[in-house]
Length: 232
Length: 170
Image 1 (cartoon, rainbow over the protein chains, first blue to last red):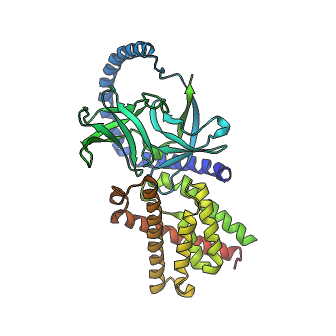
Image 2 (spheres, chains in turn blue, purple):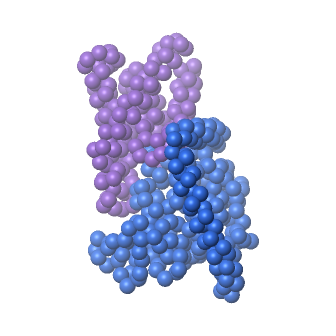
Image 3 (cartoon, each protein chain N blue to C red):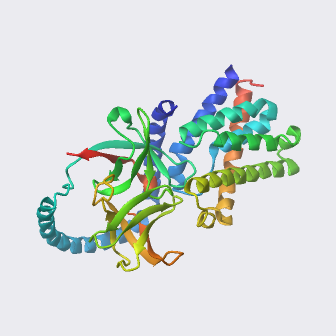
């Protein structure tokens, strides 16, 4: 059944994405000038930070090789186009135009920009696959803060958001912390970026801490994603 | 045969638009349900007996296309078509006074039925209801969903009516 819909969904999705982008651009022309000015000053600050981070990156490569961790750019990636989304608008899943014929299997991680986690493959057909997004209530992923000190579980909230849950009361977490996959369990590679902590509060039973995590992705605008097949 | 082919093309187009166009336009909830409105419009125009099996078929195809539990949308569409059958078809196709009010009532009722059944399915899958009805079941969200569906219903109604007269379908 999916094969029947696939070619039409690809065409309509691409056209809709372009039309949506054009509409947004025309509506935002007035704001572009102010944004441009703001971005120029931000760029200067980022250039300075980039220089500092290059040193950090060199150190990171050395340390990762010492710890036998996967280098970040040594994954076999399969590029896939998004052809449809959850029709109820609950932000629960995407459908991509790659399937078992392309080596895609259930459980594979799906990313964008080589390191931002989108979700995991949940169902595979010959030519298509369904990707369960992080915001889906059935999605649970082991995660930690970027410094590795605080561990917990990332779970979705009815397609609306992401919660970093089961954080011990003794662990430290604050607004602005970056959350990445911890690699526990071996299903999802370690170090894939999930989002940034927006708010921290106690769980309902007060046994754990919970954090609301904001992803940098706008899932509804995704057109191309990458499936991590394996490490090179 | 001609009718079956044309209805299938319309259903097919509605599913493609629902999965590949509307989510990009609405960017998350609420999103109108084009396929549901097509089934409702078909039930209003053709009647319960004629459209019953189309509702079942449309639901099954929709479930296969959207990775939903097969039969869920068939159940929703069956309930919608069955509800429409309680009212006089002659009365419901008049776009005046009571007829128009009835049509809007059909849209609202079918939207609510659909969201309740889909919502319960989500709750059943994740085994919890806490936090679901707040963001997703609020009055504002439902009202917007019903508004979108009302517009989509009249579009589907007009398209189906024009299609039937153009292709001289009974």
